[in-house]
Image (cartoon, rainbow, N blue to C red; front, side, top):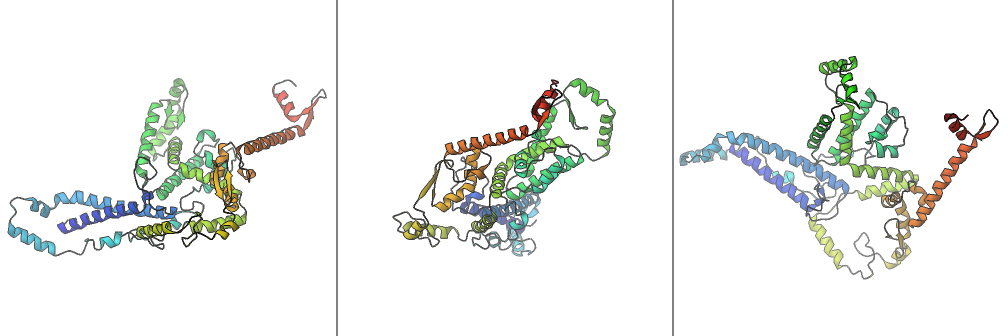
Length: 467
């Protein structure tokens, strides 16, 4: 590696460092630790979720390029004869002239030109990415159900799970328990291992796509290390047969059995496959990384079930508008803030699309002068009837109902008081129990002595041997 190549590599390292700094200054939310209170980062203009994810993928490429150049410099600079010669105290002026003339003859191969242009930050609404990340396409990375990584898509895995599970839970319940293997009754076998591998691979791929700056390889190594320690502490576990034993005597007898010896021999002759215990443990640890997305997916699925077809189409149009990329850079943002602050707005009216307060008559026409307070949403006030009606299907209101123990939010529209919601929920549960009781007592049977009773009572007495 010539000195010119080393200089070009060092220049690229400097440009990448500057490019990363510019992006974090412009949008601190792309930093993975943005929400950590211990990290004193300034909050900039609110950017769309899609823009943040795009720039995180772009930063991942910057970091990969940085690491590659750093490794190249560390391994080759120490062996560079010209560089060593420059450090030699006996270096002669004549040799310096020869070396200087040699460096002036730049080799076009490998020399990085236009680095500032390649890594430059763009801020147009059409394309915010530099040339390095110009080919990043989020639409091809995520399915429609995932919506650019906001939600997880386990629909196909849920279908696999239904073929293995004794309990046929719906998709919402599956999202809640898919990583809680002690709450599932599944048929263990090759299909189960295949299901676990597919689920684990999906979770790892999802984390790579939604959290490109997260060190997944390091996290997987930590999971393997922790699992090994757990297995070492459990002396009654047979790795070859993938079984736990409750007693030492049973475990000792198992070690001499034909089935165990056969599994040991098979493990030596065939490629070792991860046990289902390890994959289960890995899944539980991976889900902790995306716990927020799992909860959002559950709430979103419940909310969408309550929407009509027309409301779903309106929501899709609104989401498309909300996720448009920011069309202004930091200087424009400062100018906009200055303009907004200088607008005369004594009545504190909402701003229209032109940045000026909407007319007062329009404000009153839409009923924005009327406040609606929802006690379930921590006494949050909504301006106008339209925003108030819409909030019953939003995650904040649904979460408030969940905190009250209410699992059927669609039945509680227009209810804003906590006491009213609790009373209605008690009445609904009472009615459900009454209907259940009526179903149980609907069928009557007669014993040998001619006593008439419900089928449930008859079965209970028969089990106890009283009939």
